[in-house]
Length: 379
Image (tube, rainbow, N blue to C red):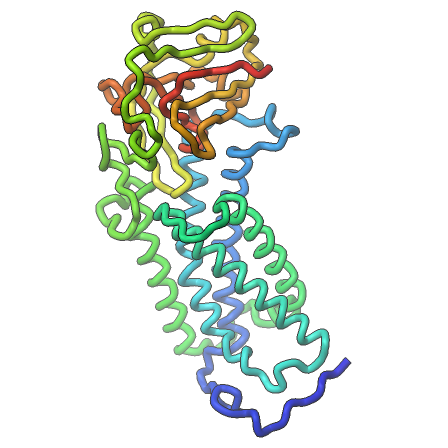
């Protein structure tokens, strides 16, 4: 169904014919930038989905999660943040390439064309909001009233759905301009070189928070993995959690078929084990340390629980979304999973979870519960 044609008198400014003369506002440039942006968004989406599943696994998947390799989450979440940051200049370049189409005349040639343009508006809005909130999350700066993780998750699905629909509509044009034309425009080569340089630059000065060999040029990343108490960063301090003064009579409660309690001296008298494991946070930074403490599986076995038991771990912090966390059996039974009492040869700093904290391979940092005072078996 065609829509009424707007009068020619409205064609002013960017709406006038010939308002955009750059030869780079063409389908070939859009396709090349779109390929790069699509690759970054695919990596970002898949790694973000993995992080979400680890933090909130569906019931059918809980028994199939694995604690190994120990550094997997460090890699995937680092890739998530790196690809998300790289997507920002790519999205800007893509929008610059196609924005003259916002001023097409007539604005809508029919109902189908109008719906297509509305779909593109939804896609761009979802992508921009997803990348913007994700960037602010790396800074732990939450200027919105809605919960970040859930909103970020559903925005990702909206963006991916809109992207797939857009690719389906534009498939013939994408195929037609996929191969490099001969001769290639020198302006296009220069533009693509500039975009590549900007992506590499923004990646190089932020990726050092998770890539050790880039740490010397880690100029714009919000975290330095080697700065903080005992050489480790801190996201949530003991003061913020309300645990700055742990009780002098602290006791660890282990609840199961044969419940018991342990004082700090009794914990220290148990077999102590060491493990070099990373703390890998959803904001993208990660840092390895040498942890020492009691194996979680030894505490669970002493409570009379089977190796297949899942756990609920409770922190002394006053409130917060991760005051209680659940640990799947694969992590609880892993010999590297510790109730850590020491880090890098020192008693835990209060900001790192004194008197005791969880450290396990392959888990997000938000699930490495600090200030632990209760471990409950939930078979």
